[in-house]
Length: 180
Image (cartoon, rainbow, N blue to C red; front, side, top):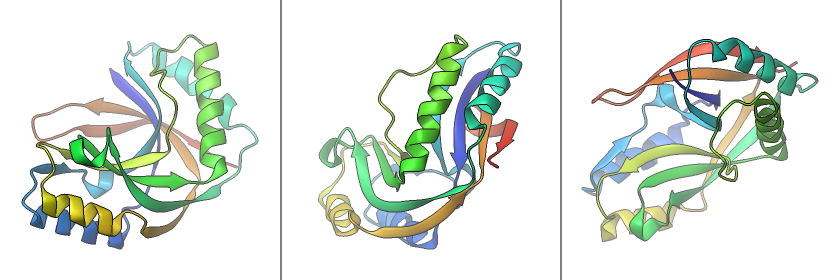
């Protein structure tokens, strides 16, 4: 199973407008479906089904004592950079999301659960870019770069299974841990 730990987010209307305008630039992109909009706290990758119980225990321990909190969606970014973008994203701001990611990663590292070792950058992917961005797309990105997309409440952490298909990934929640 291909697994990751995430916080689901609502896809805000201003971001829908940006995504629509991005498509209008003629840039070939694969937009993230609104129901798949999330922040990945830890990408685990391929593991056997027996790992789910271990991961669940780690997530419950990591979330112990953490209550719900708010994050701001503000500003656009690109990996690796706008002129060569492969991924466009919106920044997710708030010290609590970083603390949550730190706790999740420490707990899962302590249990020997595999995971991506890159530094955590709180973001939610908007689109995967299929070609080098054109001038219209870069201008639109610059126009929207510092935009505020709203605040959202985070009240649960999920272990998700990702099944890759030609039409895009299908996500399934395997474990949901409430923040109390």
